[in-house]
Image (cartoon, rainbow over all chains, first blue to last red; front, side, top):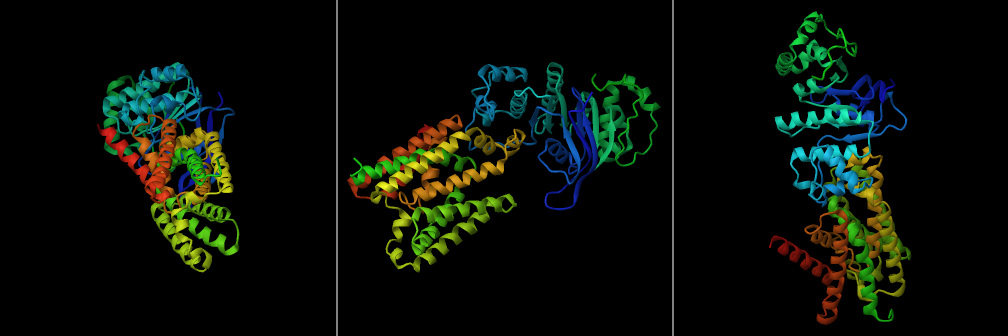
Amino acid sequence: MSALIESQGLTIHRPGTSEPVLTRIDFRILPGEIVTVVGPNGSGKSSLIRALLGHLPPASGQVTRRKGLRIGYVPQRVQLDTAIPMTVRRFLSLPRRVTDAEAETALGRTGVPGLGPRQLTQLSGGQFQRVLLARALLSQPHMLVLDEPTQGLDQPGIVAFYKLIEDVRRETGAAILMVSHDLLVVMRSSDRVVCLNGHVCCEGTPQHVSGAPEYLALFGADAEGTLALYRHKHDHDHDHMSAMPAHAHGPGCGHDHSPSPAISGTP
Amino acid sequence: MLDDFFMRAVLAGLGLALVVGPLGSFVVWRRMAYFGDSTAHAAILGVALALAFDISIYAGTLAVAAMMACLVSALVSRGQAMDTMLGVLSHSALAFGLVAISFVPAARTDLSGYLFGDILAVGRSDLALIWTGSVLVLGLLVLRWQRLVTSSLNEELAMAAGIDPRTERLILSLALAVVVALAIRVVGSLLISALLIVPAAAARGWARTPERMALGAGLVAAASVLAGLWSSLRLDTPAGPSIVAAAAIFFLLSQAMRRA
């Protein structure tokens, strides 16, 4: 299967400086895959996304997007200017006009049917994220890109949102690339996790990454908790985890230690 | 009909109202209120230069206002704080304009005409220019409407759709420069941004979509022109300020009715 987006040796500098934000990133995402990028603040997660989308020019290396690739994008912290009056229905027609039927189908698919006449500013955080997702789906994308889509949602809201993402993948076959802080949920709903801190620290199945020393070093106690909960829910993974030798990975290590494809990330 | 100075004033005001509705809405949406001010103040410098070099007032103001628009766009893209830059440029431009105009003896007597406009002195050629300019700018806005609205709402979403927000910002800035140059005769450079902002602000409370706000702002602007000119004719008030005062009253009414 050919990659939807692929980067080779991608290096990004902070705008106007020669200070690298990201160094030599090799990344690819395949059709239908759910890939999550995790990493501490300032680790270059959003820069990676924006470079993959072509919004940031690479300092070196290259990004290849498949020809004719349609991407549905939900940026981080979409702050809408409250000065603009905007109904949900009108918002869905920006910038490409869609029919009422298309709009209602998209809203229904993301679980917020009938929200069309509401003002965007009157929506709750969860409703707004779903409207953004509905808008991203309108172009029938091959791939959805979501930059911290659950920021500002409460725990049940986060769980519900990731469940929705999985449903969308199942129904549309779209690949999904996410940036997230919600370690627990990410671990459950991703096929592959990329742990980023200026470079790719470690990468692989959720089970692999959550056991990697780099990951534990970056996320510390939080990760321990995530791991414990994760193991608790999937105790069949214990054997694999213990079979995995805990060794240190060098920078840019992208190899995968998971012993068999039997352990897929989705429960 | 065009022989009557009052009729010409009404037509000039309505021609401007046509374009200040949608353009003023963008000024409100993008919080560019001071942008209008600085372009308008720069226009005084344009008047001075036009008089000194004996070229058309419209050409002079348009050139300086357009330069100002590009300068501000460039500075903002380079990461300068918008409000500080506009404060610096706006008042410097006004100061240089007033200094420059003092060297042109012919203009000194006429200065208030450019600061406050003189809609009742609009001639046939002014009228033709105002309508041509308004229709062209309006056409440009309509043509690029979806792009402009998307990038005003959120630049990231616009970029994801293949829209370059910088292009759209520049287009709006240049459209603003054209309208400022056209409006200097009608309401003068001190009150142009009021004509852009106040009707749009009045329409904001009622509108549920960007299009309705733009339309509503246009209607409020047109009503303000008619009310202001009526007051000028009946009560002998100065025309330009009366138009803006009428717009301000519409704004107050819209706020009061909204609360009720």
